[in-house]
Image (cartoon, rainbow over all chains, first blue to last red; front, side, top):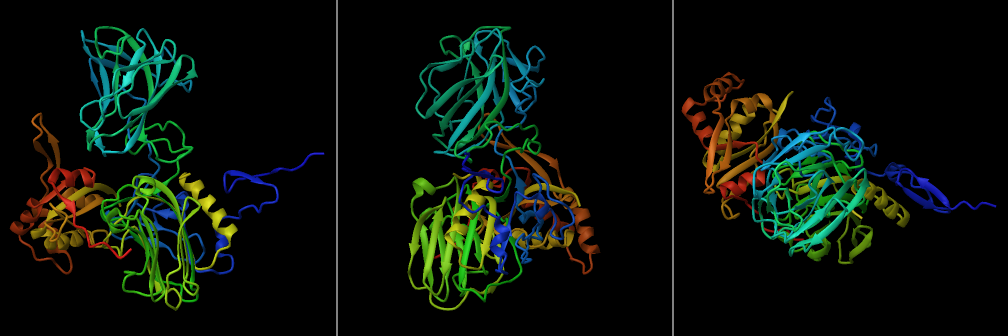
Length: 463
Length: 140
C-alpha cells in the first residue's frame, strides 16, 4: 500500500505535504472582489517600457507601466522617463565573464585568448587560456573597478584549470576596499588550498566540477569604501605573486562577483557579456529603483469600504543612509487619514523597517535590529493592519517581528493613489529592488498570509 | 521612441530654466525632472539637482556629454564626448507652441551649469562632493 506524502506545487516551487491546501496563487486573494493590487515583476507581460503600454518590457530597460494583476485595474505608471525603475535580473557585478581577452579585463604581464585546447566546464568552447608574459614580476588579470562599500561582504569566484601553471588566488587589485589578502593560493594540480587567508577573507573553497576544472571561490568583507576591482593573481608554488614563469599557461572561465547575501539558492554563476546582456535563467527579476527619483504610482484606489489591510512585498534595499519609502497610500501619511506606508529605513536608518498604519491616529510596527535587517539585505515584508481592532503587525521573512496595539482611531482606509518607490513622486526615494508587491484591502487568514509569503519568497529568494 | 541613459546634475541657479527647457524638448517624458536636491552637506538648501535614468535619445543628443577620469595624482580630468547643441536647443524651444523664450546665452548658461555623464548617480555625486538633501525624518 502506497501512502501519498504530498505533491509538488509548481506555483510555490516546493513540496506540499499531504493534507495541505495547494496555494491557488495571489489571484485568489481578490476572488471575492477585494480592493487592492498585485504587481509581479517576474511577469514580463505585465510590464511596459512606456506609460501608455505600447512597448513591452525587457531586461535593462525602464518600466513605465506596471499592470495590476488583481483585476482591480490599479495599474502603476510613471510618465517622467528618468523616474522609471529599470527591469533587471543582474546579480553578477562583472562583465565579459567568459571573455577575458576583452578590454574590460586589464592584463598585467598576462595575455588571454579563447582556446579550444580544452572545453569549458559546460562542455562548450568559451574557455580562455591565460599565458604568463614578462619576467620576475606580478602577473594578474583584473576587472573594471566599481565602488565597494565598507562592511559589505562579497563572494568572488572563477572556474580554473591547470595548464602548465597551477597556482593562483583572488586578491587586492587597485583600491583599498579589499583588505590585504594574506599569503594563500589554490593548487589546481590537486585541488587544494594552501597558506592562510588574510583578515577579512573567509569561506574559501575549491571544488572539482570535472575535466580538471575547479570552482574556486572566496568571501571578502570590504574594509573601506573605495573603488576596487576583481582580480586573479597568479602565484608561485609558495603563494608569492612576484615570480617568473614566462610562457606558462592556465585556463579560466566564468568569473562571478556578487554581494554575498544577494539572494538564496541562486545559480552560483551568472554569465554576463556586456552590462545589458546576461543570462537570467534562474535569477529572479526585479524592478531596480535608483534611490534618486524612481517611482510608480496609481490613480486613486478606493479602500473606503474596508478597515483591514494586508500587504506583502519582496524587496532588497541597498541603502540605509536616508529615510526612504517603499510604498505609501496617499501623498503623505502624516497628514491624511486611513493610510499606511512601509518606510525602509525609517529615521535615517534607526529602524530598518517601519510599518506606519493609520485610521485617524497613527501607530507603528517596526524593528530596530540593524544587524539583521540593515542594508544591503533582501527580505519578504508582510504588513497587517486592522483599524477597528487597533492591529498593526510587521512580519519579516515569515516571522512576526512587531505587533503594535496602539490606538488607530476610527474610520476605514481612504481613497488615495498608491505610490511605490517614493513619497508623492517627489521625496524620500527608495534605493533597491522590488520583486513583488501585493496590496489586499481585507483581513487575510493565517493560511493566506503564510502561503502568500511563500509565494512572494519564491520571487524574491530572501530566505 | 529610442532612449538613452544619462545622469544629469544641474546647479541650483540654473535648474528652473533647465526644467523648462527639458519639458519643452520632451513634453511628456521630460516633465518633472530634477526633483532631487543635492548639497555638499546633505542639508538644505540644495546647491544642485539631479535626474538619473533613461531619457529621450533625441533630447540626450542635444545636451552635452562628458567623461571624468582620475589621473595618477587622483585629480579628476574631463573629456568632452559631446559639447551639446545650444543653438538647436534654443531654436527648438522657440518653435514650440507655446514657445519658450530663451536666448542663446541663457541656454549656454544652463549647459555650462550641467554635468551630464553615463555614471551611476551616487558615483557622480561622490565625484562632485554632493549628497542628497535629506528631509527631516518622518515620524516612524
